[in-house]
Image (tube, rainbow, N blue to C red; front, side, top):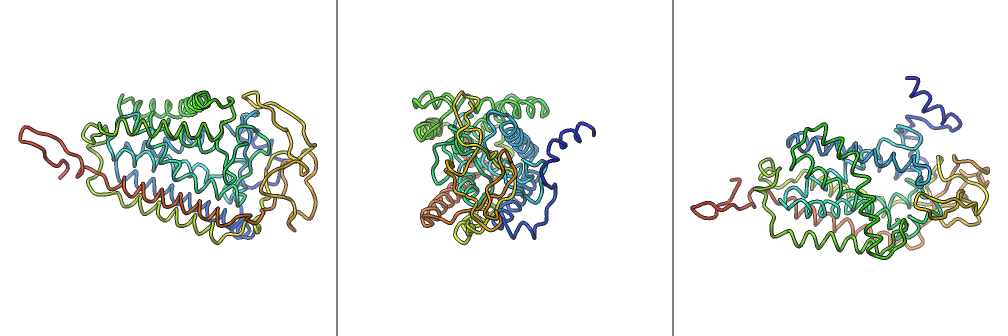
Length: 403
């Protein structure tokens, strides 16, 4: 208990709360309140789905929760990486970590991984497919989150400097490689090698982040990007290699040979499909009807201070230690009434930021619609596969397995 008190005591200077009023949250960050409980609900549905399947699915759910949360905490508290700040949710585990973030990992990593199992692909192709399916869930959230102040990014950190619709290319590449690595480790350590669940869980949690970092470094090397500064080239190379791996190994797919094959139900998995369709519909409605200019985030952000004070990040890239109004290039400002027309005090890390109206709303809506349709179509097609579509050859000829 003393250790926990010591840990939390370093946050005594800021007015954060473990539990906040949903009514108050609705007044300042309405879409964030919807998003927070949407992901908590989806994570709960994923757990119910896992329990109804078998222990392999339950393992995948808990692994996604622990490995994802560990990754977030690692990059959040590593001083020279620390480049994102979550908004204050109604349920906060720490001033930097909302409960719903753990549920986000459960949503995109669990659904992507177990959906890919249904195709019976070889290990590498399955991992690559999981990575691409993970970003189909995460990308709409990434686009909405930064626009509606669900979090804020570091203003000048090179690894997140290349952005599309406000989303760093590095964030997109991270989701693909991290989900792919996670799926690969579950398949190899837990399903193929059949290690004990405790050993496999530790391996997945400890190795997912380092192996993801190795992948990202190699992709930047292949694409001739500067190390630590992923650009569109790195992303295109990564997606291309993942697609090639899937295409080359797809002819060898067999649910009969897959470790989870005997436990995949014959019927299409409508529960995941319905959950994701509701998810995409909810995010599209947020983008279509939401007004980012009405959003105010009072919480932890990049420390405000003197302009152009340089520091180096973990990869040796130079960035500015503080954000300042004169130089910042973010999609928020200090102009709303909640900020009282005042700039934050120098060296403060808790202050109010105000959302800005869309400059090209149709573009944001179209992008959200594209990813929602892509994800809905992909998952609906893959979730149709089951044992009724896996064929095996016997001495008497071909027969339909699973009936």
